[in-house]
Image (cartoon, rainbow over all chains, first blue to last red; front, side, top):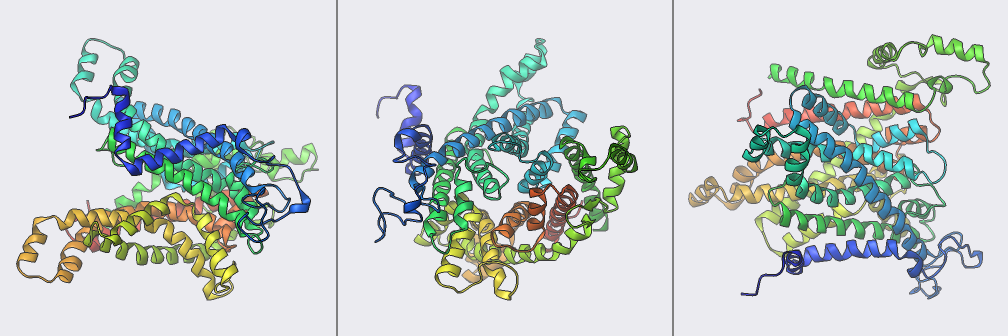
Length: 293
Length: 305
């Protein structure tokens, strides 16, 4: 038998044994890397127009040009550079949207499960209501009410994603709290007179962390798709800010002539989301195999 | 049965109320609601008159009750874009959306049931691997992108099917495949795992031991029991499917409610947005009710309580 690794490396050994989880981790890491290192990686300025080389096909085409590796759009902007910069907003919005949803959802889930009684009833009814409205419609109602706002629309988008994503966290956390609060260590903490807030934060929250981590990873996948859908419909990030959803919307208008404009942004979204899903599934199997999502 | 139906309909009431509250709040946080009702050049007196006429000068709880009454009567106010009541405009588009949703469900079932069944029966085969990989990829691809790729291939390259609209019968093929395949992946996965679960049960072993043919065991003994979790997930996917319809309608210029709502959001025609969201949510709730009722057809053991 191999000597037991130090605990902090154990997850790495587990990950190495699981090629599918590894693939997910690599894809996620790649997306992060591209998002952070965009200025270093992009071969050209993403917003630089070059009217002489409009609608150039990718390099492997006969009319292609190696310096515009994935081709150019209707304004002669380099598609590859735009994809690389697009990763930034997509990843940032994905992470922010999940964070907002997580904070709200976990707080309400903890309160709902721990307090019980009418508090639980009210929060559960709110959760039910949000679940009966398809996400995209709620997003439309919110954008309709708030307007697209000025600037890039990022703030509205994060609000919308948080407002629609908290339900999943609240539901899962509530369910877990319901069973944890009956366990002996919570009962004894209560019997020695610890306050409810202390019990929630110190005894219950650490026991739901695994679920929260798994759920967050999987929610990033959902949120990236949601962001791209909203931006695609013109309700999210506004051009000239670059996201993959915005690029797809622009590419759709040129389907008949330039297939690459709509194809590659979709591929980028799919690979990133695939990474988050595979990594999230693997995390679930490692951290909390009983969890049903 | 009637008792069950009744209590199930009662259960729809709290979320429906919740929805009216959400819509009420949304209408207020977006700024002064009167601003949407009057001409931008209207005088102060005119604005005050409209404000009083709609009751916007009353306390919030009175405003809410008033608006609740109007919503339940189907009155969401007038669309300023069409200069006519919002609700009929939305209902006019309902059939197109339902048509798309039904066609998509059909596509989803046609893909998911054979895929789920075969991958469970031939577990760990190439076919199983194919279904598993396919359903994972399907989870990762945004449905509007699938739609665009289908247009690119079948309409632009092959010229087999129309790009958009609802003018001919073939128009529905691509939207329905786009929307249907997006839930088929989840459904196939659920059916596969519940079939695997059921096939391990003792009564299946007994049936096989008695010499019941493979086809009979699968269709009669196993599938029926495996369908229960399948139907549950199918019901849960309806909200997702109808939400997806909003996006897919816009990809294919399908003239349903989703397209109307989006166009209204863009010009902030709030009456139509609110009426549309309300009707959409109602459709989701009614669909969930129908799914619950369908348990009885599949499994007589489930007594309605």
